[in-house]
Figure: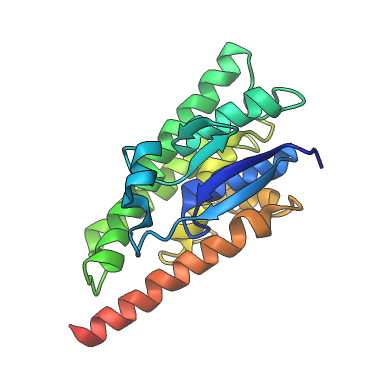
Length: 224
């Protein structure tokens, strides 16, 4: 392990935070994790807003350099601390593939997950409408079709995998994935689960988020 220690304002339930955790583990960076309690509004305090006016998590504080947004943080960490550029290649075509997958994660996987989970967690939603389920299943199909190689952006592990799996693993516990329909996703997930740090950095938090959403659904339907 390197002696590098950077501060991360984070919440293990949050997929973007876990994507950064996976990246840090892969790079051997020790994170000084500052947990931000969103339900208590800690992301809306004047101190936090000064650091990140968009009041999102995660936020990285690397010795006074402040970076928000998970994809930007991951690129920064690999570029500054990576022993090589394998997780975020400098070669333009490979890098473009990684960038495309990062945008797919934020624009499709995470966006659809949020669209489905937020009404349940924050607005008392007691069911997942059919069209939202279909929207998620379409996202699964897009991910399946993207996996023409072993990993999301080619034949080696990159930050695109960390990003995509952080959202995907969180959704699959709520809207299950049919193995026969999405065999490539299953194979890809098994590959990532073999990483020695996968469970600690992502698996446990993804399970926790899924269970939280399912228990909220149940509580909300009792109230409804």
